[in-house]
Image 1 (cartoon, one colour):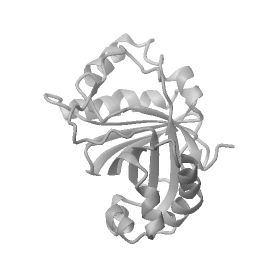
Image 2 (tube, rainbow, N blue to C red; image 1 turned 180 degrees about the vertical axis):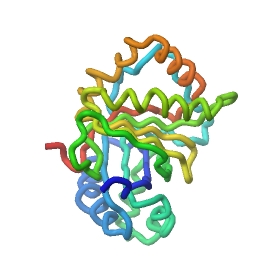
Image 3 (cartoon, rainbow, N blue to C red; image 1 turned 60 degrees about the horizontal axis):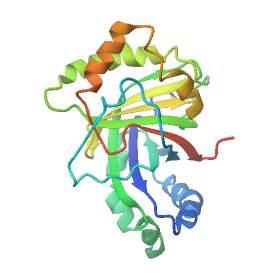
Length: 246
């Protein structure tokens, strides 16, 4: 199955308290299963973002976009994987939504601050907790970052940092299942990084401190991260709520 799911459609959004349970029941029992009937769609996954997340490095080093036109939803993340990004262009998400029933459109209208990206995978690695053969769907816990390089950022440096340090270091990290780096086809963020863990707690136990033993690489990480401009709420640490975690 290696290489069969190189396209991804990511949607971040919030939900009001009133009607939330009905929406989730509809999404998990009706909408996602129907979407997975679309030609080329290979998997779907829905996540709830966690709060009070401990991040690596200095607490103030993450920069976020200040443009008020960028939607700020991030409490839920819906993802679909496909054989390539063109699957999500024929039909587009907007075309799919236009064809839905009025009842389904009403449910989707509950989303607050909805933001989406369609992206193509540029690289992936497997961690020590990957299954053999690897599973197509996403792991129970993820950390998803979405960002632009920012003013003055050398994108070659960003690419080198992922290729030479961050992604190779994850291949030995306990609890890591897989890491996928994406480049955008559509949407505000140009770059996305999707870390998969056996659980969000496994991530907390290894990822946050994994660079401490290598000060030189820790400094490189700090230099690169401080130049990035993240989407609202990014990076998100999130637990999978569909499919249910056994």
